[in-house]
Image 1 (cartoon, helix red, strand yellow):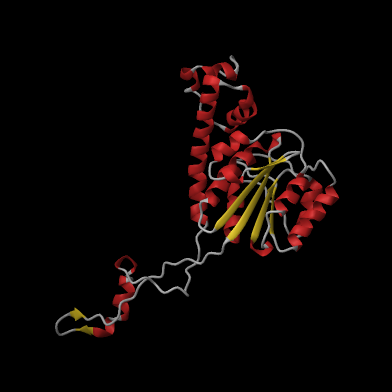
Image 2: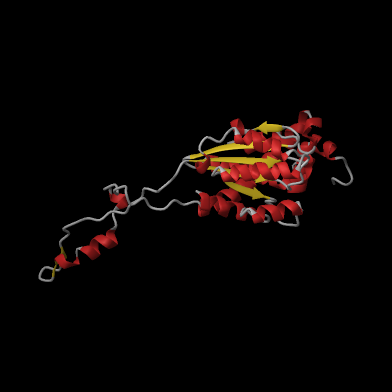
Length: 283
């Protein structure tokens, strides 16, 4: 249907638009064309983008919740309430008080489960390339940022860039709104985005900076590498990501692939589960 008719014409018709299934190629096209849409076409485009965001968010949220689980904090005493009662341990520890004559177990001490989790406040700064080749990463990382922003004690910041830098932090909890504010395409000035992200760092050793890009810099490669090294040397947990995709091949600048591996921060590429696992280790 899209081959026979212009997508814009399909979106104007509610009945035909309802037959479209949201997919990454379709969402990419909608995000590129959104500034040229209006009226009913824009309404249906927004509905399709929202549907795709909701579906993907449901999957990613399950992956994050499985991965990010704090360790029990042994320094915090357990709350002595019935729901925390460790019945099995209580019985085991009180077996010495079993009276065989009347067949009763006399409980001398109750035991409770500890539920308090250790957590460290972390400032997470996600800097994502919004150039045309990074659509999959832009969509997935926007949703991922909103999920991590909802976790306790995570201070999330989101920046998108091409030749300019857009601070999307005020809308980080709403991935749909973030995507509607991005302008996919254009050049790539990675170092400029990192310098702006550096302004958000207050405690380097308590900060994670996730850079998502193909690392094809529009400026000097060496200056970009020097900036990355300075960030890493300051104590920031620097996580370079070449791609977070559903599947498929992705090109990353070979010079940066080699240099960052030598620096001890190899570029992550592949399925978004890799990034979730890396962030889990951080948290």
